[in-house]
Structures are given as structure tokens and as C-alpha cells.
Image (cartoon, rainbow, N blue to C red; front, side, top):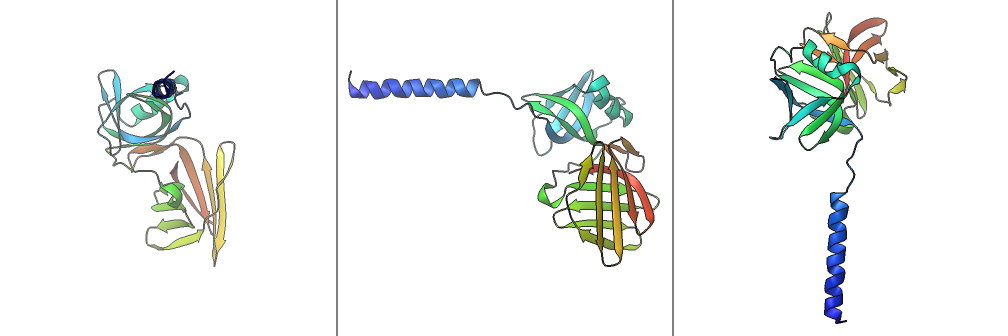
Length: 210
């Protein structure tokens, strides 16, 4: 056989094999966090990813349709546009959603926190906000100085996630429980209920993963 023809035949076989491998590449079925805006049109749930002009139809694959129930509880069924963070599998124009990390009415897109943020939490009466990740756990309270403690990995056991830290005269204990938390002031719902204890002062609110 002519050498040139042999190389051509081999190249054709390799190309066909590569194309077949690409066509049969398995879909990544590991749920990941999807960030974007959502609204309801007719009986369809439409999801538009942050910083992307595409859209996807949402299929609720959660137990007992819990994702849809949570989103409806903050106004999706009433026609409100939501900012949502959903755990799910995005494939083409379909998002199979299995859990809600957070949902807020008319909220703005928030991209993942990366190494600088692992958790956020906030509450009211008194107003407070916490950001955890990178090197610090930072707690802000209305009318009081910021508290910053060294960050260590939050420990999760079952449905409870904890953090304990101390620096100078401050001692902070954080407890997140995997139960839905509704914040009427923020007009939203979050996946975790938060309880913080700073030097004996107890702060309650909601938390969500970043």
C-alpha cells in the first residue's frame, strides 16, 4: 500500500474515533451550583445564568418538588423575578434542579466566592453580617466595630456545620443548621439557619454557601 494512502487512512480512522468519543462523552451528572435569574412563563420555569445570554428550562428533580415549593414561597408563582442559586445539573437548555442554596426577589447576580469566600450569613434585630473564607472570618454588627478571626475549615456533621475561633478578647462560635431560613427583610429564603455566639451575645439569621 502506498505510504501516503496509509497515513491518510490512519488519519481518517483517528479522526472518526475522536469524533465518536466526543459524541459519546458522558454527561457530568454531578450537581453543581447554578447562579442566575429565574421567572415563570406559563407552566415553564425559565433560568438565565449570570453573565450569559442563554437560558434553560428548569426541571425540578427534588423530593416532593421541594425546589419549586421554596421558589413559590418567595413569589415565583406570583410572577416575581428571582435571583437564585440552585444545586443541579445543567445540560444544554435544561437545568435539573435538586436543591436551593438561596433565592431572593429581584436580587442581583452574585458569582461564587472562590477561595476568598466559603460562607455568608446575615441577620436582623440587631443587624449583622458575616463573611467566612480566605484567611478570615469577618463579622460586622450595626454600630459596633468589625470582628475578624482566623479562618479555619468549617466542620460538618450530618445537617450541622460549625466553626469556633478566638482572637484577642473575642470568642466566636458559629452553628449552621441545614433547615430553610426565611428572611423577610431581605425578601428571600436560604438553605441554612444560622446561630452565632460572640462573647455571649447570640445572633440569629440565615446562611448560604459560597
